[in-house]
Image: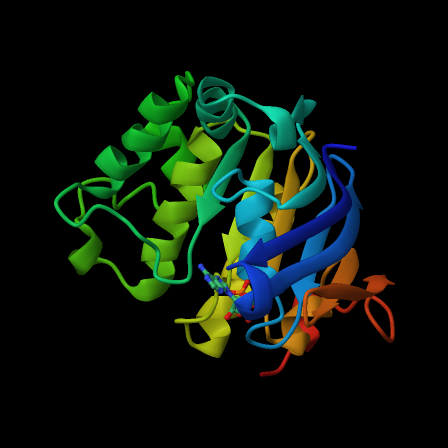
Length: 232
Ligand code: ADP
């Protein structure tokens, strides 16, 4: 398993004002899996992604990702882990506005010390002809493709996406989902969090969160749908 969370609880605050954003969560994800984490706002989805990506620490339990026990790691080990193991995709794309598409992807290459060619990676997400465009010269869907290319260019085996279609229209959102789905494989695990149940229909596996607890974990209800069958 490339992601292993055992009995993970995350509490914010202390004493009577303490909130358990995650409660005794058990989650195991294999390389090559495309997993959608589904839950309403406030259910703990972002906290879960941040704990897996070592942007936040669990209060209790064990978090092991890409063979590294990040619940018991030094700051230096966590720094190396973020560089070499995970890449993030955000709802708001989070590209550098003053860098071109190619330079944004180069940033991912440099940050991870990978040897991928930014132009080739942009080509693989359908943007081979837009290397020199700045983010404001690209559509929302194209900007998200650049963000996916930046994540891919790191060569890191765990891809974490927080509401990646949240700012996109339906048609563009579906294309981005399809692209993310294609990235699972080659030892890569892709975890997408969303409040949108429709998105979960194309997952291999749906993990449902409610008030910080996992209340479902299995194939989508009614079976895995084709991207062409989605509506939202
Ligand atoms: P989601 O991504 O599903 O909307 P979050 O993981 O952002 O949920 O939040 C889960 C719960 O933890 C919510 O009740 C939220 O208010 C709380 N929470 C999240 N981050 C913090 C924080 N830094 N301090 C205090 N409470 C937080």
